Image: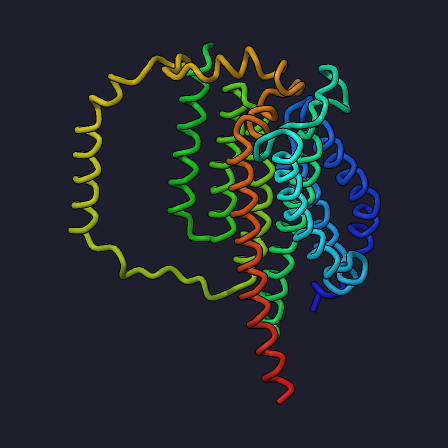
Length: 148
Length: 182
């Protein structure tokens, strides 16, 4: 079937270049979440769409080898766990659950706002991995049904 | 032109798009017509000066479109069922909806004016948000500091949804493979 081998050479070559630009833009949105519009959710969806681009262009076999799907699942679960750990660290350091206990720094700096950027990064990883994995599982199901 | 005029225009466009999506025979055209609704909502958020929401709405719309196109254009068995429309039920539905609209009109008269909310908590965030959290983006300071429980809940919902779908869909695949081996 076509989906196993991916699309044509033109699409593959274009994807090879553009995927990194899209991923970079996603990281930019996540890292500047406390300064500009966007944040963990928006940037995570951008990264998930970039990975989805790879899946559509290169097909299932290549993506499974290149991305190590099992590793993505562990990343997804561990980011959720780390959010909880960071929230519990608020009790220990700041006095309340989910407290912003780090130094807030100066306004408009990249390294400012205490724990907010860390939450943003973790939420970004979580959203990106979970959305991509949902599409991955759904696409696999459709493929096997079509084969029968 | 004021924002309200643009909003009326966009909302009318979205209603038109959803009607077109309902009436379209071809499923790909219907999916694209649904896309009008989501992208219109994204532009409406942008006009209401909520770029955070606009970005997320726009991206999720693209995501949903890709999933819908992948899911529904392959299958050939999406034939419309013609026997589902009963004239009596349709008339009853339209009449009851009109009645609900008529009786809910006094509610709209009691609403606060556009852009003038009755809650004063937003003012507190605007004045103290940057000082308290050090974040220039006040939306981030609200969703990750003042209302972080809400974000934690969202993360939990996402985690549970992905856990469930991974488990259930994987299980089907596995049982199929085992059946083939036997």
